[in-house]
Length: 299
Image (cartoon, rainbow, N blue to C red; front, side):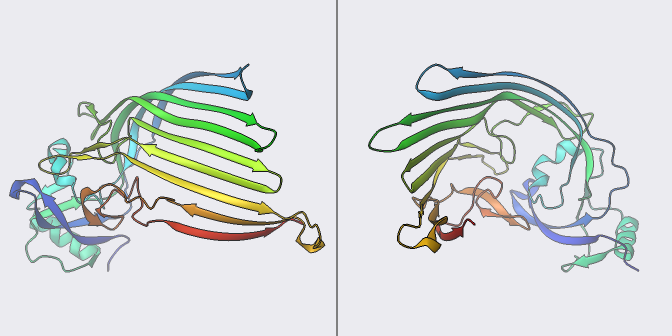
């Protein structure tokens, strides 16, 4: 009888055959050997109410995090063979697996897809925690308000994160490798600019989100992914009930995500169960401009 979990037939990009696809079988099941995750953190920072403008504040904090026994899984990573050397001796990737192991797996788990008659690749996709990492960087935030007599009140804000280091090791015994600005790893710089405005019963918010470009090192040759900026906005009007009492406390709003209909930068990654196929699902959304209308009543 099949136990909990299952086997998934998937196509993996294989650098040993010039990036062509190889049919492999991945295991998803409970992991019996997880250890406790641990982290050592250091941080310090400041908040400063600057005597300039109106309610101007600057905040900054430095962080240093050493993370050990980090839980991870390679079940949906269809580019895992491009890092095969880092998994040596772990059993996560097995070429031409032992027929006895194949027979045991088939007798224990159900199969999603059509399993090959002869297995040339097996990936143990169960959760495990051999990963260790070190990350360092700075979080920052700044905000101020600009009151005007005729144009209402304007608030400005800027926040973001700047990483100075990101190193990780695929196994506890492997050396730390720089991962900053590599695909599926932290970007060196991400920031968000915000503006809000109010005048009488009108309100408006706008946000510009920026992330720097990065390297897609899962392709051969490697790819430089472009930076990306997306603008979102919301405009609202709150009725005061003048002339129509029942409208008092009612807000009508129009929201627009991706105001300028920006397409995400092209990323040469294969489609997986978590998305992808021409874009990075961990950072962007392929859906273009979307608009929404809301009506809220405060009692």
